[in-house]
Length: 344
Image (cartoon, rainbow, N blue to C red):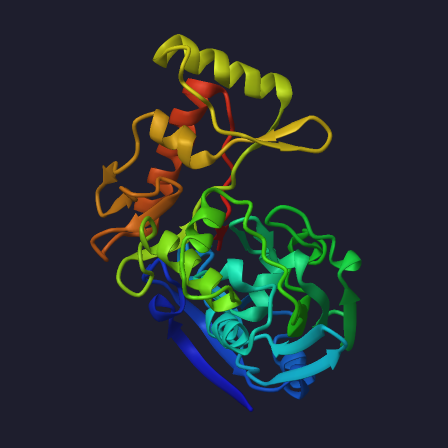
């Protein structure tokens, strides 16, 4: 079924709670709707939106917004493997909770991330040492350019840190994702290497299960991240910068000179002599943790997150705060922060 709404207010469709309208909102409940929708949008500007948890509307959108409400889930088993073919409109955290209750391993570390299944593949969402690419088997889409259904396997999706082929300039919004198939396991395959997750999980006496790991993740997230249904945010606003070894050494030298030789710069070693530095650490070190700019702010518990802290922030206030953070980090460390959040 196709639902069309003209001049649709988008405040309820973006978790930053920015007031903006789109010219036309189109919601669809079946992949069979997409050939019809392809004709409806022919020649018009359009975007594809999931739960709106990773987007900043910088102004009214003079075009069509497509949203999937494909909500069915199909399950198949092959030995210990579990294959979940999930409609792109399914809420990810609801799905993860259901999988954990069923004893399926793989998605538990992504607990608490807002958004929908289709967007998880576009963004390659990740947290606590796991990314969507680690459990995505294939992605089914409708090609709005060639008007045909296509399926991409994991390798064809070109997954990288907060990246997939669906974000390339030449493919962006070309493919309307209808289903994401996740490959999970009935065998215990926990990923507990991140931070103090292992200590937190193994300290309980409630038994080892995906649900136990999920609860530990939720406890850790809730301790530092704002609830999107209470405070407007788009989750992690900036990517963690990945830099060459010499750039990391420069950050260390600056830190030691300014804060003492015992100042440790947290890092994650990557292939090809690259180093990932937590953006939150950089932002806190330049004194912006809890910084308020009009109705916008840097979250006081996790500076990676920008928030609409009064509920009245304009897009301009968020953009101005973004620029303040980027400029301060660059001036101090020579590191360029890149926004993770899509700007529309």
